[in-house]
Picture 1 (cartoon, rainbow over the protein chains, first blue to last red):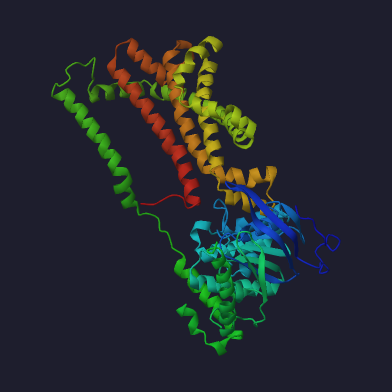
Picture 2 (cartoon, each protein chain N blue to C red):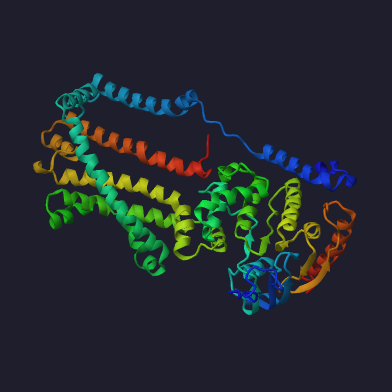
Length: 262
Length: 302
């Protein structure tokens, strides 16, 4: 489990990093012996930084996210985070037996927020994702985009310094995804959260991040990094976004091509 | 991405936030479907009418068998009218409700005890790997054992009394209820467990906030089956252990009919057993199941 280096700071701004991944490797027992999924990954996420992890299938990006979330243990190396991170999945993972608001209240309750404050706090979080008035809605009554926004509100309810996102918009249609990119950017800038965002969509990575980290596949290694200094608000069709995306896509294709040349 | 192109490049900034809220509201409105409740008339035609017609058809065939003398022996097949008059007499003598209440009160009380035992047992089997390996297969095997098989040992252990009836109900219903919970728990999507863990719901908190509510549909299905098994077990017990001091339930009524070779009374008892079993299911368990499924969006309409 991750140990908190910044424990003394305890939530204050003095933490030097939101997540520190040091020489982390992960291997699983497979049919062809032990398979290394992640090989010697070293990566820091600074407080308030937005980093995307980009890679083709089999690069172990979701595995890495699970390790940072503490859902799994690395085979070697160490991971430390500033408190327990919040995690958002590709599926909304909202509990269907609770209303949208009660899903958020459950997260607050598990964090120890007193009962009297939960309702109001949940309303605030729903307002933040522009779903004020959806408190009593059942999960199945919401559209895909609304569900992911409730899931985001629930993740924010954990008040973590670090938000991990595992391809959270991959299952949405293009227009909805674009809107949610804007929302996520707005919320990230308002809350000054650190975000580690996993995706296989290059444009999405460039559109959102301050730093794009490209992982190679089988085993996952850090292949290259780009700093994105395109000013916000960005649009997915911006020329600067497109140009950098082309460059990164070329690199990603090169990584994929290597696997066909044995 | 045609719809976002309408925002001109130079209109970014201040207009952007407003535009986003409007766009989002539009998307939400487009993708949210309003579900109207089915009109009463449609419910009647689609849900009520077909079973009523089926019952009417059965009664007509029955009456025809008697009227056209295809079965010409009242000791083998009484007419619907004869069964009706036996029922009416029992009602007028004030005994009909007594028969029903004797059995229903036994059945529901027995089911309640089965619930109290089956639920923790199911949870234990579902959550503790060793217990699951040890008694899981036995528990599901017990479901295929006809509950009437428990009557002879229960009579020997406990004698001809109410305790024996409750014992038979428990042996019939507890495995169903426990199994329902076990299968409900094993069908909980792993994603919910992971989501729960990242929210901090581990151990008992995880069981209470995530596993149990997620397993509720399977549990309710188990309850429904548990009631059917309770009712069957009770009837088996009442038929075999009919003893005047125990009061006359529906099973005893059936047995009395056989002893008196009164076929109308036998039919009366069978009809009552069937009706009560269905009525309890329709009044308690089906609404409970529908409510659980509907609130999760799992009930497919039409």
